[in-house]
Length: 380
Image (tube, rainbow, N blue to C red; front, side):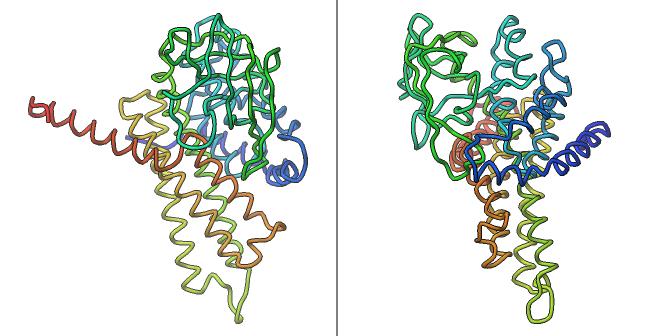
């Protein structure tokens, strides 16, 4: 079984790497962090024009038709560059939700808009702490939604939101809400990484269009999270690799006691640990990409494994990058903190790492029980 990318996708990766380097996406992230803009509008416009947002969207709906493997390649490069654009909210969450649950008419209406640069997001959480879908208070009646969602990734700049709320039958469902229309109030909220904006959304009778069958919200979110987990894993692997590269470069150029600090055992061990964690995460991400592209039965386990290993690898690499830089690594002038901020933020975007560990254990147990029952004909 070959988990490597095709030559076409490798070329796409090289082009994405070159483009983001020429646009100095890392400097753009710092500029957004220092300023008041929620994202780099010029960079987002160019990304849309190149068809990146619609990489996994079929051509019939205005996308590039590259499939999820193309989206994985782009996610890794965007993660390495810390591009301050609402790519994940739009491509991993909003577009994927519509691909999973949308009717033909909804796909024809919304997917071309997202592929062309409209910003989408997923409004799910209703406050800090572990997400509990059963205790969600947002509700829809007569196709009008009321409730509060926070934090919503890129909610301060999004045009369209996929919102989870209880329908008239009190079952959880998904709805599409135009955030530019009446009945929507937004307030930007502070997070550890201001280069990726988050907001508090208050719905006061905003129009809500059903997405998917009534009462299928929990099942649809499970499918969406598995897909998004693989895509976020690639973004985290990109960030982990960039952190490792930064640490290695500094260890080779910084001298102490007449020799590069990279020659000292303590620094060697840090770099080795970062490398091992990043390669483990990359392996799991590649397996997840295969399962996602094939819609394989292994996807739930592969997605959870990719999510856990990538979250831990990015955090370790970002933390040890700061340590390798020593006292300078803690200063605002160096870029180490930008990766640390993003690592902490992405680790919470789809739920905490501990929650994904619980999912992974539960899914492995279920798979093993099913395999045992199939082999013996006896339920465990």
